[in-house]
Image (tube, rainbow, N blue to C red; front, top):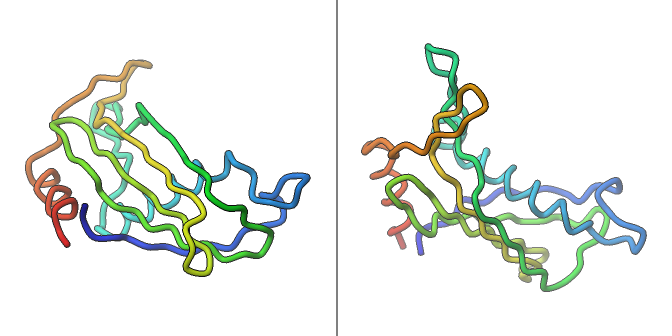
Length: 141
């Protein structure tokens, strides 16, 4: 699998549950934060409004997260995103969550390149220039 794109963030008190650990649903939000930061790092965005008012975006079609160890308020997390697979219309990311060098969770999400208009999602092929950039990241070492 390709090279990592890494961001760090600190666990906020409001993100913890009654047991004082990071609430499980926030891992999905953090994966999305890493994905958006990844797109910005390439000078791109994950949502583009077309001239006709429709949007091009990447809705999720599959997500999962395996939890390995708890983290607490004020712990600093490292989120390492990798492009795992690039299809004709989809991209799969893997996000490793680390705290003090130790894996605490492993998330995975698959997104589909879609034109969105009138409340409908129409999968479309990823443009070749973008696909080659993403494939290069998936295949780099």
